[in-house]
Image (cartoon, rainbow, N blue to C red; front, side, top):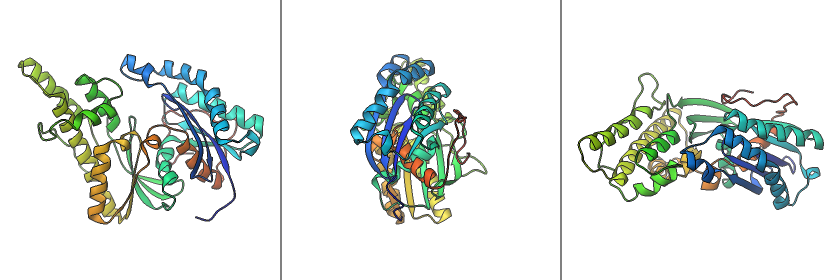
Length: 342
């Protein structure tokens, strides 16, 4: 990729329960990446409470932005644009970030660039992989999304497959709650699964007629809950580690199988993963092995760039900025924003 010029983007992310700000230079160099997490607060309720998340964003956002600018050793006059997540996500949480970004952009006379949250996750792969350029295939797996995306060019995407019901991360959270691990479920299942037998229980893997790249995790989640309830009704003990390992095996296998099928069908030689579930050690290992067997180059962000963060929004915002994307002061939060929409 040719160097355009030195461009600094202030990025803001507040789509769920992380208040984050970052300064990103030329789309791939992170000068700062500050995240204020609300996990400890929401775990009291077993999941994210939207109203509480919104209030916490309001409390933290100025502080987080000031810290990001200080850490990057820049001022508003050193910036070229402000990028912000405007969807999808929790509407109240998104509004906090959008309002803040508009205020800063207006006061500093900077262009405003709205960024799609999933585009941000995909773009996280650019940060640590300077050689990665489109086209490539990307699996985005998180608490709210499971998408198999063909990245045709910067900012140009084709969704090949998506979940029909629960997202992969959502299924992790629900199963974790059922076996008594609590919230957030993904890291806890990943950890306890290493102590269990992945072949202890054979859970189903869904295939959808006429949509071979689509996913469904609702049936798998129900199968786990039914197994646990069945054990309780019969007075039988069950091992949470075995259930976690068996559940995780079913999730990972279906994610890998459909991803590799799409890579083969579309002749893709570069494959990336993104989103919170992309930090799962079993998934990363299985994807790496599957790609190696097929001669596919495998890319993945570090865990800090898998979960919600503003650096990924800065990376995506850079390419949107170069493409001429500009938003007006009427930019609003769009909680159900589709990938590719403007």
